[in-house]
Length: 253
Image (cartoon, rainbow, N blue to C red; front, side, top):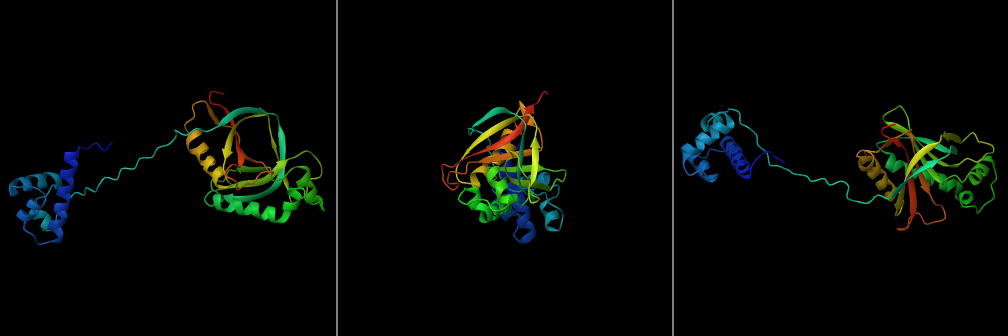
């Protein structure tokens, strides 16, 4: 991994530290040589000069030295975890919902606030504990808005649109809401278990950082990814079930 043997690493580190001692102290060369395990000063001088390109005396007088910092080896293990998914072909459908633009940098923090804002205002309609009183509430109830969270990638590399949505079944479309059409598409549907938003955000990272980037069979098809939520369950429960739908196509298509 390092292209350096243990013996070479130790020797190079000693010679670098010896050069620092020469620059910052008035210690004799013979003492510095002994400090870094060289019994003979001439052996130290030869090794030092080969490594730094300058002798100990030249370095003490201001000549340049070669830097050799400690190795920091970081092991990053990806994969090995089972990601539960299935491939499904879905017929065309349309969603309806509330949209807002987010930056990729802050989305994981800001999107849950968007959800809270919508639920604070419409939770009674979403959970069918109140009769809809206006066209927006009627659209929320009829189309089961809050079943989906849809991320739509735009041409701007820094921002995307997020829609708190439901499946549009018809009726009046309020000016406060938008619709989005999906064509006949093949989807990879990933099962997620655990309290939201953390569990679904973690799964999202695994899908795009590991599953999709290393997949030799499928690639992304389309610009929208769907989160699917099940409203009759406790979203904070460790057993809460949700899904992420990723539009895909075969790589050889």
